[in-house]
Length: 321
Image (cartoon, rainbow, N blue to C red; front, side):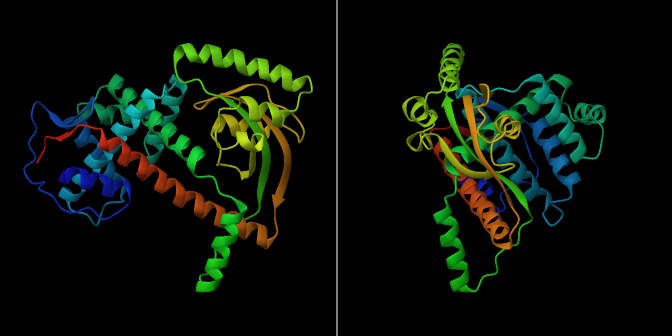
């Protein structure tokens, strides 16, 4: 399907081919269907106007902008539906924060954002549902990064050596605080599983507090396939790598301390902070910057692979031309 190629190109950050965009027509005000979700023409038009106001599409024609925005809306719809199948949701506070972020990006207040959406045919409740979907989509991306964008010291060494061989200048990073921690994860994907997961994590927390070996508990019970074999060891990480709830818990600990059970979109965690360090030397800052570059690359690849997987089983019907 030609549109599928266009959509995947957007996800991969590639240039979009121009498709027929003049004289857009819609059937029953539906711009596209993405699996079980409808994207309305009013939503497409509002998103196009928001993209134009952002100033990042000045070099594109109206047709190219519309194609790119529609592709992004379909991508987002498939990600959101995948997130909901995983049991992810957005709280009212998260919706409020997302609307505030969108308003700030457009340099208006939240009420002005509501008014602007209303002029495009999108009511207050519909805009909040869209914001909730945006939160769920971001949680899916965070899961992908958490699960598939971990970077080892060996990978950093290899990247630095390759850059040296090819004469490529490496970025210089600023000083940053890093943390080394272990965790135990118990997933809570569905409503019934959530209650059992909470009971399990509190039981494990009591055992860890009583002096049982944390690494052994992690190897035996943690459902994080990446870290459980290493006794829950997450290696060194800096701010912005972990999901907000996890990061906040880590920052509240002193080395050697154990967190209370922490809930995130992944499930329930117990976290043990082992060490902290300031990456202040030029070499440490450089390694941190290289790590961030590798994380970004892995995250983009993982997201593209996830979207490809979603498309393979998805029904996508574009009804504008």
